Amino acid sequence: MKSCCEIDNAASRHSCCDIKVNEDTAICKECNGKGKPAREITIESLVKEPQLEAIESPDGFYYCETPTCGVVYFNNERQVYLHKEDVKVRVGIKETESPISICYCFGWTQERIFEQIKQQGNSTAVKEISAKIKSGECECEIKNPSGRCCLGDVNKMVKKGMGP
Image 1 (cartoon, rainbow, N blue to C red):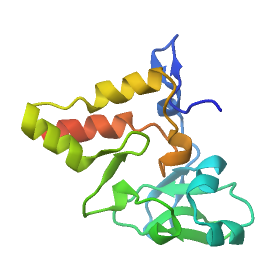
Image 2: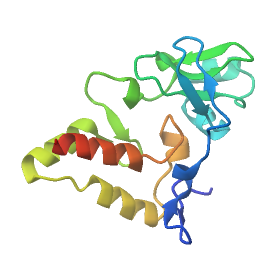
Image 3: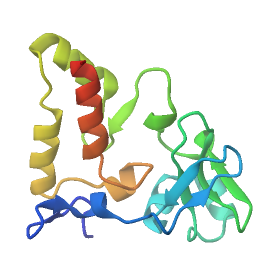
């Protein structure tokens, strides 16, 4: 399986972080927020069995990125809306109570990052995750509800924890 975080040596970028979705977005009908395409492997890996069987095919779904919306995946054409309770993991972006997952492959939560910053003055999350990505250990496409690499979110959380 090709890792979604595989590094493109020519560009020194993570391939999943470069997905262009400007032309391929959809609007969640429950919150009017933008959704990004969800991979079939992500839907198959993270949607609970009864709901997965009911949708018949995991293609054509979008991931709702609105933190306050209960919808995680949707397909407007089929009128299918899968909510937080239909997913096997807590969806960090949609959670307000601990633990708030940031990196699903290696167990980094908002709390862990903030605690490390509090104790050490910085966080090793980005460095540690990057090293594991380089060694081929990440599985974002089957563990992260967005199906994408978490490094961007981890960087934002570290900056937030470091303050102004």
